[in-house]
Structures are given as structure tokens and as C-alpha cells.
Length: 437
Image (tube, rainbow, N blue to C red; front, side):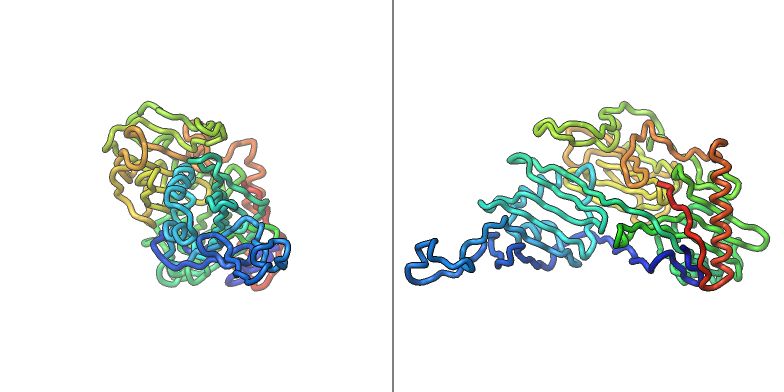
């Protein structure tokens, strides 16, 4: 069900995503899962006098050593760093480095949100065994020791579904400020501008009184919001023209006539072709443990200083420097697609910057821990890595003929939903089909 109005929602009001931040040294707080005071990870037992102090059989249960595996909990706060967290918990920096090595294909530890729960587990001998964290209410990650010098990454994902809300507004001043007033986030505004910028000039062609309606999808578990959102439909009406974009089941966006609203992607991020030195392989085995250790992208044998281009229009989502991945850039290409570029030598973009297809974003290099210069390139679709050499990518094509009728039905229904939501207050409508992933 969709409740329409100035800021309307399906089902319930949902939490906004937390702001990611780069970690630096900060505040420590910890507690033991067995409710014992933690110091150097070993439970402290109050000493007794008399026979009971030396005869375990005479000790009351309340003072017997805890048998549970010691666990340290930490809630990430502004200014925290993994290095300080590990030091305070009694885990070695060597183990943190081993975990960062296991994280090189995921970069899940590069930025942690305030409020993220970390759990460090030790065995009875005090050896660090596992780091666990919750990325959001639906996704958790563990790094588990599988050998003396090796940790294994594992991600757990709960079932989720999408619910939608309709936001509407009118232009008074800039589109950015008008959209903020309607309840849209900065990231959502950037996505809308990216979807429609090839249809109109947001700075020059909008006038006071022009209106817009947006269907925002919110990802939820059975009981909680994950904080993840997506643009499911947008309609912007100006003068006698209407500009639209609809997310379809193939993960691409089309206008009301079934024409792609985004330009074609480049297959690779370099002007020239280079030898693939390592292929995408989700089933690659670790040479030491024999366990699955995927390679989530392709490695191109590029010399240091090779220009690296964005493969599509997008917004720079992350710029970082990982001890194993080296200097890297993440680009969000509008809800469905993201790309990642690792081992860079020099970066020319900043977080939040909009980039065009074919725009130079960096020079390739040899940063991080690698044996030779190369560019590691990844393509993610719907939050999952896919083979960039073979995956279906936006090609500026129309909706396939076999799916056109179904697309038209979805587009007409969503237009009706946005129209009703923009014209009447508190009108309850049937839920929108959001099964696009």
C-alpha cells in the first residue's frame, strides 16, 4: 500500500542510511559476553582465603572460572580505528593485517558506520579467532581464522524485500534544494539528476512551479530497514513536457516509451586493450587453505601511468587507500551498477564528484601488495560482483520486444501512482510491484 502526500510512505516511515566515515583513532568501549570484566581478554576471578581458595570442589559456582569463549563487543563511534580497537581488545596488529588481506576483494572494513557492532572472539588460550560485524540488519560479515596465518571472509545475508514510498515536490529555486525539501537525500538527488540529465538541463530549463514525483524503494528484513534505498520511478513535469525514468526487471532504466535513459557503458576502463593477467573467478581456491577465495574482478596488465576511465556516467562513492588493494576508486552508476578500480597510482577525482562515461579518473599503478603493475577492475550489479567481460551492461537500447508489454503495464501503473500521490493527500493505493532484483 502507498500513502501519498507531501512525504508519503508504503507501510511505515523508514530509517535513513547512516553516514559512512573513514576511521581514525578514538574511543573504546567493551564488554564480555560472559558478563566478566575484560582485561587482556581473560576473566578476572576474585581471590578467596582458606581451603576454598585451593580446592576447586569447595568453590561456589559464582566464583568458578567462566567456561564460555571470551568475546569482546565494541560499538563503533566517531573517531574509532580498527587498529586501536584491536589493541584495546588484546588482539595483535599482525592478525588485523591478515584480516585486511582477507578483505582485499571486498573492502568491507574500509569505512565503518557509527553504531556498527563489532565482536572479537578469542579461544580459551587467549588467541584471537574471529572478527564479526553487522553491515546492516540484513548483512553480517565474519573473518575467521582457518590457519595460523590465514583468515577467511564469509558474508551472511537474510531474506529482504522492498517497500516503496512516493515523494513529491515543486520547483522553488534550485532542483537540489526543492528535492531536499521534499525529503530526498543527497544520494537520491544525484541519482535522479543522472537519470534525467540527458533529457533536460536542470540549471537552465526548470521553472518555478514545475513539479516532480519519485517512487523510492526501501529494503527491509521482516522487521527492520537496512537503510538501503533505490529510485524505482521518477516523473518530472515542466511546462507541457514530462520526463520519466522507470527501473525495470532487468536492472536498467527506461523512459515511458521504453527507451534507455542512460548512455551505453564501456566494457573496459582503458582506451587500449591489455592482456587479462587474472580472470574473474567466484570459485577460485585459496592456494594454502584450499577454501573458496573468489577473485571479484579482472586484472589488466597495464603499465604504471596508464589512463583509467570511468566505464559509465556516475558519482564517485569512495576514494581510499587499502594496505592490500592500494589506492582505489568506487563509482556508483545509479542504484543498480557500481564499478571499482584498484592498485591506482594517481587519482584525479574526489568523493561525491559526478563523472561521465570515458572521463579519466586515475592512472593505473602498483599500489598495495601486488607482485607487478596492473589494474584490478570490478563491476557490481545489484550489490553482487559480476564478470565485467561478459555481464549484460546498459547499451542505450530499448526494452526488448518480448518484455515491452509488461514494461508498459508497470510504467503506466507507476505513473498513475505518482499522479494520484501528487494531487491528493492521504490517498491509500495498491502496492507497487518492486520485484526488479
